[in-house]
Image (cartoon, rainbow, N blue to C red):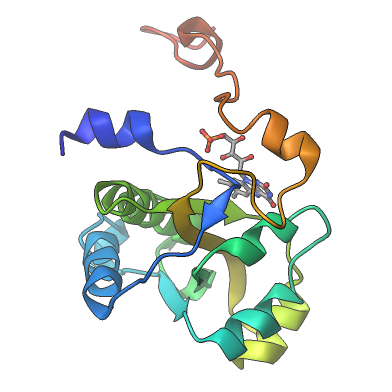
Length: 184
Ligand SMILES: Cc1cc2nc3c(=O)[nH]c(=O)nc-3n(C[C@H](O)[C@H](O)[C@H](O)COP(=O)(O)O)c2cc1C
């Protein structure tokens, strides 16, 4: 798949249908992540892939109200990191930047495999730590729901979310976020 096609086709859909996620698919997503650039090649990202019915059910209890749609997915990826795993240059901490770039690559790889990935900030880091045994000094950066796009309304998507499922959220126009030659 062409890179721009993958970028255009990636959407944070909420209507997720079950899909078998094989070890090979997990390996490809991990590989796409690991090939990302990072400061001094520090590779600060750590991923926990969750596919078992039991662990998915437990993790669903850590999601915030409004993210019930994620219960229809077939995998969760918990992304963790900490500032000490990457460059800290004076006040500049690079771990979130590098982890975000790497996850962007994972998401595009997932598109090519016909999967939806949907990052969430709406979860409890405390419950996630407890369920997964994540040490206190690691930041739980995001939890990503993975599934297959459903053409039909799913069990756990709200009416409001379903109504806008096909509409890509608006983006800023070029001059609002990108400048030429100088800040403006
Ligand atoms: C860090 C992050 C946190 C997000 N948190 C949530 C969330 O908790 N619940 C949700 O439904 N969508 C969440 N989203 C999805 C965004 O709303 C979505 O990416 C944005 O509206 C752009 O839509 P698109 O990804 O379909 O292009 C999150 C996305 C990111 C990157």
